[in-house]
Image (cartoon, rainbow, N blue to C red; front, side, top):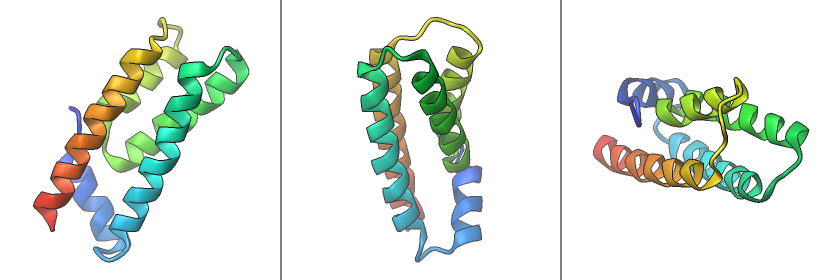
Amino acid sequence: MLVNPIRVQSLRDEIGAEAFPDVLALFLEESAQVVARLRAMDDPVAMAADLHFLKGSALTMGLEDLADCCRRVEQGQSFDPAALADLFARSRAALARLEVAMA
């Protein structure tokens, strides 16, 4: 599932509708930086830390496919930086559409 709307609504309920846009913006900003680093990275230790961060953040925000992609790479599957960036972009767009629908 690209975006789990139940998880997103639950998070919105937990932190409040007023704070949700700020949390979402912070997630998108930090995650975009991580994805950009991962595209250019060749340090396995740093890559593992960034993948773990991205996986946890994606789970928190209800981005199940993105989290699953990170998990698979953590477990040893081959890493395709372009595919991760594409999945992040699609997840970001779906999350934005969901945010508009919830407003």
